Amino acid sequence: MRVHFSGEAFDYQTLRAMAYTSFGGAEIGEVLTTAERIGKRDTESWHQEWRRTAERVEGLAEEAAEAGRERTARGAYFRAHTYFRTAEFFLPADDSRRRPTYERSREAFRAAAERLDSPATRVEIPYEDTDLPGYLFVPADADGPRPTVVCLGGFDSVAEELYFLCAVPEALARGYAVLAFEGPGQGAPLREEGLTARPDWEHVVGPALDYAADLPSVDDARIGLVGVSFGGYYAPRAAAFDDRVAALVAFDHMHDLYRASEYEAPRLARAMRLAPDIVVNALASLGGRVSLESRWLLENSKWVFGVDSAAELQRTLPEYSLSGVAGRIDCPTLVLAGEDDHFVPLGLAAEFVDELTCPTTVRVFGTEEGAGEHCQVGNLTLASDVMYDWLDEALAA
Image (cartoon, rainbow, N blue to C red; front, side):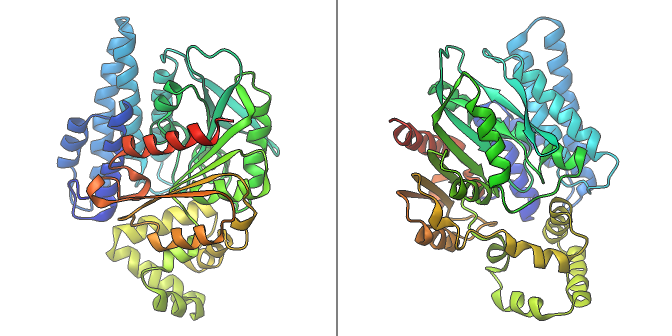
């Protein structure tokens, strides 16, 4: 699905921002007029123009808040969050503008979330020698423990974005409590503490489930775990080792990160595995000079995984595989996949499902549904309906 740009990276990120229109996180006109001002493959104008839109919409929010128009302020703050987050996206990890842009995105979201009919609660989940940040959302009419959805993101996620991507408004309307949080390699833990990714996410989700179990709004016997994007690896990995997960959603699947990276060119990948580090690094550098997609993927991967080179990254990615682990999952599992997913090949969904021994439902979204892209960002309404209809049944007991 092409929105505006010929380049895959810019176009998908534009679609991603536009998708949040479904739940109040963007407006189509604001997204498209911003995209029209951005130069082809020009990451500097990408940052400047998305920031320009974000600041304008943030101004609308502040004006409405000062006038006591709380609903208007809430909507504008939510949209400003999305636009600041998008402005940050292609900045290098060491760019001095990255942290302030991220913080403005986070603060805009919090200004909106505190204006919800049932204001979100900021949480801090004890984890090793620090705390993991997140948000608890509870229906306005909640009375006692509720079936609960725990949402976690992936490779480039922030917890605030999960409000839209995991369709929290739809979850609340159906009576769920929702806990969304960030772990190592994501959001604030990565940006503020330098916590990089780890493959054994059962040690990250476990503390979140401990925390959730003590909340009066959470029915700890009915917890559904939803992993978005690379969270489609993190969540199944956690469910394989923690029987407190009553239902699992891989949204999308991410069975094997290294296999996904080599899927389209397996012969080249085999050759790269045999090549000396100096060759691997040189080829990766060359690829980054000619391809925005390759450059962003390599640089963001080095930041997220805490590695210094393409060669080191090549040795790290195979650690993130569910092969030999997926068979341990014993709760009902929903696997979502997109026909046109350019990050996770559809064929890997079949490999993941083949390893599962639990009750499993697979939903492949097609091009004609407008939901064939990664995480179904072309049709989040359809994806969220499928997900929550399934959770309604899986957590009904």
